[in-house]
Figure 1 (cartoon, rainbow, N blue to C red):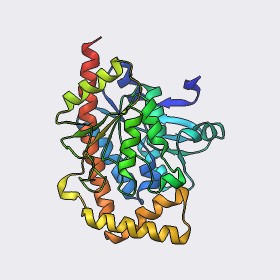
Figure 2 (figure 1 turned 60 degrees about the vertical axis):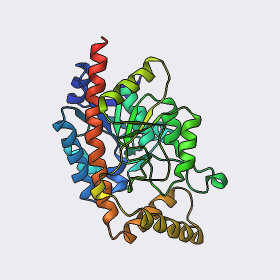
Figure 3 (figure 1 turned 180 degrees about the vertical axis):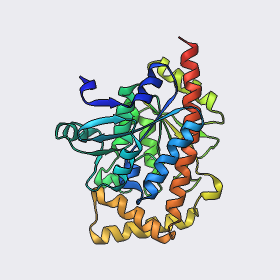
Figure 4 (figure 1 turned 135 degrees about the vertical axis):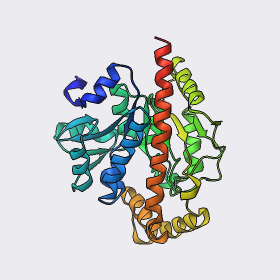
Length: 309
């Protein structure tokens, strides 16, 4: 029945059938994460980086109620310009498909779809997490439960510092999700290389990382793996500046009664203004860096699966 809702792009389908390396990419970053035309330029460049490393990119979205695993350039352009594209997580999938709507996939829904398609590695900017003040609001991203149940490795620059990173890591630990630092002992905080919190384990090579991930799934320990890949040093923002910007923005959001889904875009917009737009460039560069690591990881993982056939 799943095939009735899903269309896998020709080159992606062929690559999967041949056992070649494929990297899943989300589409929320295109429709909700960046302004046009930077969003489209970034999406296409991420795909190019992955191709240049020898893997096949599969940007995932929902168009007219059909799950698309792998987008054409024109479809990426459409997502970058279109208004009213719905941000789709696990809970939204049935409705968006049944009503024939357009949707951009979050970390959670991209993981679900990647897993259904047989893609093992997913590259994103940052994962969602436990929001600050969640002990009162219970505002916890669905990304975390997806990481607990879905067998996809997620390469990210950590979690945005607008979240409660300490509680996010505690949540992941509770559900048995390994948090691995790639060439780092500290969990990255998206715009900055440091967060003040450590990772479970540090790994310095994609080959070793692939072996750990495959071993986890060979043991039938279901769930994903978080690979925290820090933003390159030359593009990271000032740690103190970012934290002050977030604290000030949180106070303003509370005063204005901004709650729920509206909090994150409000905070990110404030950070962008305070950093004079540097946060956008940092966002782009960290995604490029994640694409490079994700492609290398997918290739190494593919070698292991071929060896064991």
